[in-house]
Length: 381
Image (cartoon, rainbow, N blue to C red; front, side, top):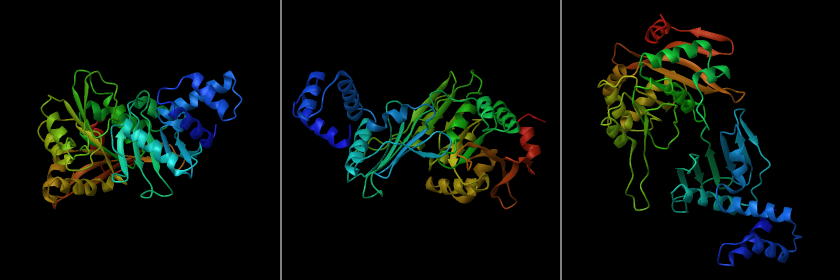
């Protein structure tokens, strides 16, 4: 059933002013000149269901095994990512109004507002799917929707190594870092696998330890029997009720954590995380957007400034709070994996830089000047 006939059918059923029944649908179809059979009626009922709840025409894509992302570029196409880069699907959006209605319905389901006065939204659907949408004309070539699907079950580090995301040396180092309570940050770009790797590492934390995870949208789901998750939220339409990550990190400190985790460091909450890691909370960790491990200090310096922490104070905190930066990267073939690891090292001028420890590429493993210390910290030497 194309969009034109679907809209006509929905219009007829809408005039009933009550929930429609299969008999109502059959009558409406005949009124539109459709020959009604049991098969046609069943298919039409399913189409109506999908277009009135959930993700509408995207529902089947979200249920496809292996799909991690579904994106809609207005009427220019619908794409999926299942680990090999973006692939165009045969789902067609007939006009921007169709995409707009879908985006608004998804935003409403996520408890968020989306309209011309607030033309973009970031939220989480009931099943954990992460939603981001931008209405046209702010977005071109039309309303854009991005859906990130939570993994049905977290991968272990062993599974990541088996599928090629981790070299054996990287696997040994990461396992050792968790066991030795080494504080670390995972860096990388959007969709590079930061959250997947962090969840896998947290799954190795002993069951006797209490993990408190702070996130602005719930994504981390480690296999751990004592993991608590605190989720921030934006202000409501009146501008009140917002809960920042900074506030949640402070709450986490009062919850008797053995390890504090910030799902993604985005702003001033970095200051509170650094303070926590400098007051006896070993083994803390998180993720941050960065282009490489070498760029992590500059990125953290900028975020610390948002929390009112000056450059000298930021670098002093970094030097004592964090030890290792792990960088993940999406490869040209669409697969993802650990690309390099480095050490937070204090310079003579008081600044912090990342000392190369090890790099991983299809050509093999390249050890850097910080390799010996990294292996020592991970308990491998």
